Amino acid sequence: MADDGRNAPDGAAAGPAEEPPVAPGAVAPPVLETAEPPAAADPSAIVAPPVPEPLKPYRGLFVLDASQGIAGPYCATLLAACGATVVKVEPPAGDWSRGLSTREGTQSAMHVAFNRGKRSVVLDLQTEEGRVALTKLAFQADVMLEAFRPGVAARLGLVPEAGKPDVVFLSISGFGQRGPYAERPCTDSVAQAFSGLVALNEGADGVPHRTGPVMVADVVTGISAFAAVQAALAEQAAARAAGAPPLPRVLDVSLMQSAAALMGFNIAEQGLLGAAPSLPNVPSGAYQGSCGGWVMVAMLREPEFERMCAVLGLPGLPADPRFASFAERARHRDALLPLLREAVRKRPAAEWVGLFQAERMLCDRVNTPLDWLAEPHVRAVKAVTPLEQPGLGTLPLPALPGLGPWSVPAPALGAHTAEVLAELGL
Image (cartoon, rainbow, N blue to C red; front, side, top):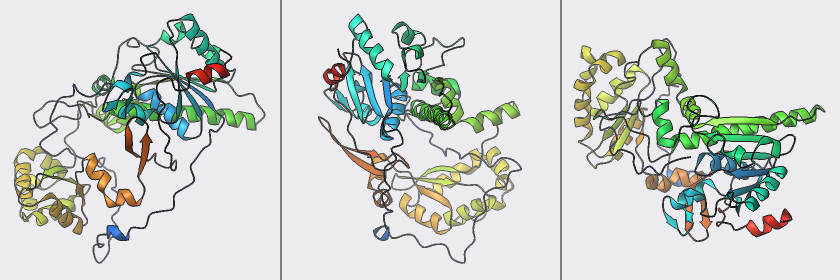
């Protein structure tokens, strides 16, 4: 469930977006001291690590994916990447993600990213024939996944009882299957707003912004659902190993809870204090160089502010009582930040990155997705998997972390309908 981000307010914060703080009383991770700062790595000398063998623990697992959008399809795609056979049931018009983002016909960049490696079956669930076929598919499934509004799947006959005795049945929705808000419509933007994520992303203009166009709530829900399914499958495997019958599992994963879990630290801290804490780690954040590019600076310890000021040619600032600590800098940020911004605007971003990193500061350029694709390190560690998608072209998709190489296209709409129905005897 997601929206396409086109309604997101424009404009990110003009000032620095602060980093999460080190909790009061906590000890920050130590910095290993060396006599000389490490020399910058020569990108041409980077040796790519060996390509790992793909992880395929779910070979033989049959997954019925009756979801659309991002969260459910992404969960099913991760299962497919791990070797599962995934049959995606689509309405005659197709998953609505086929019509969003850059597209050609019924293929779109969004749909491909979240539906690789599946078989597409078109069923009209408004007809008796479509519901019969869905029921037969469900009976064969080890994992069933649906993302309808609560109650809709049951009306279509897609219920745990329709599957195997040990089926893992996953429901994904905006607010969960129960509770006073269960029936509310929800998208990525709504989940971000409800969970508090938008409120934490306030711009310099005072307007709270969603973290768009990245579908944060949708994607983290898909990952959370994948983790829940893996836990259920592992529990069943342990039962079989112990000679016990595996039990069915019904899983309820919502965008609301997944987005909130992403901010566990922030929610816990505000609940503890009963109010929003002061701005952390000022002046961490993004600064614009003379070239128009941006530099991200992160701070965890007080001495790093002194280093930053020394590099910027402002060695006297740390002695100013207003800027003597993280707490004081937070209180006087309106006086401090203009001084730092003005200094950074005197040189290009790349030059500042080199100077800051030479002082062993946590710093790097603010890349666009195209910048990231062009980075020598990204190429060297094979962080991108080119995917040849029929009808659309070559998509440079980020590799799935830890799972090994996987470059399988998304299916055309209904590409496997005839063969799957034949397998069902229909």
